[in-house]
Every structure is written in structure tokens, then in C-alpha cells.
Length: 412
Ligand SMILES: Cc1cc2nc3c(=O)[nH]c(=O)nc-3n(C[C@H](O)[C@H](O)[C@H](O)COP(=O)(O)OP(=O)(O)OC[C@H]3O[C@@H](n4cnc5c(N)ncnc54)[C@H](O)[C@@H]3O)c2cc1C
Image (cartoon, rainbow, N blue to C red):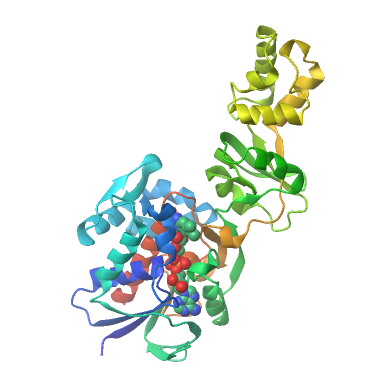
């Protein structure tokens, strides 16, 4: 009998791994089984890229790795062995799904359909793997080989790939089972929290956010905690009914501490100028446009609705530049460069695109993805303590890790 491989979780990582077995096994005698809790695999995959699936990001591995925060060095070998160009070749040549490049090196399918991506993967692997759906894995035993216990019965495998995902968007099936299963086998689980998530504003800031709902600004965003700036990021910020979202806020959300009591976000609405430069710039505008209202001067830097919000917060909405005092200017500069947005609660993992935290990387071999605690078990995808920035980084991580795991199993 051939080697029995069990893939626990049929999400992006599990499906990519199954594809790699089909590509790499060629004539080898292997028996691949995917066990998936949902009635259809790849549910989260169908939501990706706003339903269009941002598959990868076309950059060199050495640059791409910087998008994985603290995990950059861990994932580098995987990105080098199977990087974005390999992903593109695989999708176009083997799956027959043409791709296109959009802004910021992001790669999407020409059909703009994440459902088509999922269905194409399923069709590709249909003759190579047995896919058991509607079956939840509840325990894994590893005495001799692996015994996988499910709500429908037991399965035996020689090798397993754990790919049950993280904890975000639980309705898609990723309910943190990777952590329970890996934890029960002795793995350390790094604290799990939201990444790439919107931020709910606390009541004093919520009014402004609600008033400006739908307006976006190009801004610097910083996290302040216990009187210290702990992180900053620059990009688009979108005001929303509940608070803030948009790429820059989503990116920085992973840095918001779980204890938000002494934390807040700060927006810099003129990131291209220092405090002093903006103050001088404003003074020049005041001198040159004495009979202009302040909101109109500010709308040279920010959308007019945001300018109106700032003058209203500083009580200067009715003032013309000529009537401006030093104190008025100081207040405007503070709001424009240091707009404080209180945080109502730590970002909600259920609204997060990815999970920060998970199986400790110290316990996984980065060249093979094999567990150092449980030989023969490989861990890939969001189960691991890896979260990438947005732009196709997270699916590429799944793809690269899936390749290493499959290759390593077949090479042994
Ligand atoms: C709205 C949204 C949009 C996104 N867009 C993008 C994007 O455009 N580009 C990008 O790169 N990334 C994107 N991501 C992130 C990306 O989808 C994830 O990083 C990726 O899906 C993780 O893959 P995974 O296989 O590790 O986990 P998942 O895709 O979550 O798959 C895990 C699978 O395991 C199954 N499972 C769980 N527990 C068990 C169990 N006990 N027994 C059996 N099966 C189980 C689940 O049902 C699920 O099918 C997005 C995420 C979200 C939520």
C-alpha cells in the first residue's frame, strides 16, 4: 500500500497542498485524503479579495518576506522555493486559469471570481484525492502513524498536514481547531488576536467617524499605548459608521494591544509635512488668504468634509483666516497632525481577515514545515504564527508552505 497522507482542513492551504501532491507525486504510490468540516471545502477562499481572490503579490522573495512582520525570516525559504512566479505558472499552466496584475503587484484571476478559483482547484485535485466533507476532526493520536478521530469515525494515516486555519471569520469554518489539535500534541500556541481588522471607535471619537462615514483620507496612523507610540503606518484611512477601516487601519490593527484601556489611535492628516513645516505652511496660507474661512484653507490638504469636521472640533468653523489667533492655529495643527481616535475594544477576531498568533514557529522546521514536536505532522497556513499584510501575501504563504510540506513528505 502507498503512503497514506491525511490533510486536516480543506481550506486554501489544504487544497494547495493537495494540488502539490498531484503535481509532484507523478507515478508515486500515495493515497491523499482531505478531511473538511464544512459541506464544501474552501469557504474562506471564496470570500478573498472581495470575491475576486488576490492570489499573490508579484515580488522577489527577498522583498516579499518583509510583508510577514516577525515571521519574515521563517517563511523566506518557503517563498524562495515556491514564490509568486511559481504560483502564477501553476495557476496559468496547470490549472488553466489566466491571471492579471493590478496595482501594487497584486495578482488576480482574469475572471475576477474567487469561487471559480476554489472550483478550479477542486476540479484539478478530484482525480488525485479523496475529499471527505461535513466531517470534523476532534482529536489526533500519534502512537504509530496517526489516528485521526472525527465525528464520523476514525482514519489512519502515515503522515498528516494540519491546515485547519486560524480563528478569524469563524463562520467559514476556521474556529481555532488547529490550536486545540496542535496544542493537545504538545505544541505551544502563541496568543491569538485579530490582524487586518477594522477598528471600533470609542464614543468620544465615534461621532466624528460617523459624520465622516464613507470619506477616505491619505494619512499616517499610529498606535499609542501607555504614553508611547508603539507602531505607525501610512496609507488610506476610511471613516465608517463604527469607527475606522481602510488599508492603513487594517494593517496596523495587529499592533493594537488586547488591553485597550490605555491605548488610542492617532491620525496624521498631513503626513508629508512635519509639525513645524505644517505650522509654517498654515501661517503662510493665513497671511496670504486673510478673507478665507479656515475650513476652505484646510481643504487644500484634506477632503472638505474632514476639514469641516476639524474646524467644528476646534470651534473655528465660523472664523476667517484674518481673525485667527495663535491659539486657534495651535489647536488646528494639533488636530490635523495628532487627531486622537479612542478605541472602543480590541479589534474583533471575527471581523479580522487573518489571525495573528498560532502554532509557535520555534517548533516547526522552516525548510519542510514539519513539526519538531510530532515527527510526520506538517503544519501550514493560518494555523501557524504567521500573518501577512494585505495584497495576496496570506494566500502566497499558504501556497509556499503547502509546496514545502508536500515536497518534504514525498522526498522522505
Ligand atoms: C474576507 C477575507 C478576505 C481575504 N482576502 C484575501 C486575499 O484576497 N488574498 C490573500 O492572500 N488572503 C486573503 N485573506 C486571507 C486568507 O483567506 C487566509 O489567510 C487563508 O484562507 C488561510 O488559509 P488556511 O487554509 O490556513 O485556513 P482556512 O482557509 O480558514 O481553511 C481552514 C479549513 O479547515 C477547516 N477546518 C477547521 N477546523 C476543522 C476540523 N476540526 N476538522 C476538519 N476541518 C476543519 C475549515 O472549515 C476550513 O475549510 C482573506 C481573508 C478573509 C476573511
